[in-house]
Length: 437
Image (spheres, rainbow, N blue to C red):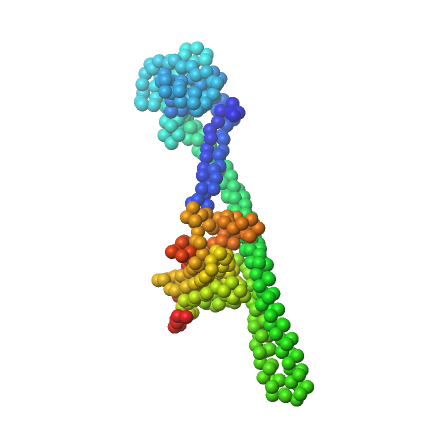
């Protein structure tokens, strides 16, 4: 769709500080106002394009005339681009009478008002591929008039295009600044919304994991409570018979069970806490492994899983301990799910240094991962579990957490199952000896 008003379009790309393309600004400079300003003089001012077609004229009847014949390819391209849509292009006939230099001549022009002689001055505008033409009727004192006309034309053209250029630059700079500010504000708002949504998704996945572990954790707490009731009954009998020393000895297992329950519930509260994104504190990755295995200890014992640990201690990294624990719990639970149909279940956790990285691997002897599913494994809402057993967000959230911590999370198959590998940069500020468990 076109407005039918002749004009010149200026465009400029808008990029961010990294040079990434964000958008484009386009400004249209309409010619009728410029033509009205030029019409105040007695001279004829024309502007032609690279094909010598006049598209700006301060006198009626001169526009859309071509100074040289148009080729077939010119007609085809003009029709395709609709540069002069629905405008009849007619030739402007003229005859050169006298040449003064390359851009100045005396010519007889068959214009809208009939044949007339003009002092024809041309000024090429190389940057745009245009040519500015000044047509002036010759006076009696031809030489004086020619010199004055040349000086006036040069000054007039310089002033007009200087003002035009400065006005266009000012408007473009103002539009660019306003657009940049609006884009920056929009990017900040969208980034803040995405960060809030990501934090909510991480917390939801964490609470979902706690919900799925709740039955096992309740059983883990209920067993010590039952045992303590029996121990308390035993203590009453001992005290009733005056056996104080035996009563003190019977208090020791009660104290140990209470300590275990306090540690478990305290760790559950810490795991459920909503931690801020972007936290990069110094932590021991082996402690994350220990605490994750503690939360899953009941399921590991109930399902008779053989657990093999090869841990290099300590393993200092930078990150959020709670979020990394969430990642590891998700990997361990997926490994346990993959081994449910196996008569002998073996879970192996390896942590070792690899150049400047800590490499943590969770290896199971399940059925492995189908090759066609490996590229989609960390996509949101992709799952191979039956409906109702998972939403497909656990691995996607884990991938995002590891990436935020500056590491990588990958998956692959080995001879007897699957292996998930988490790599994090070694915290070089931490110094100390390492041992292997």
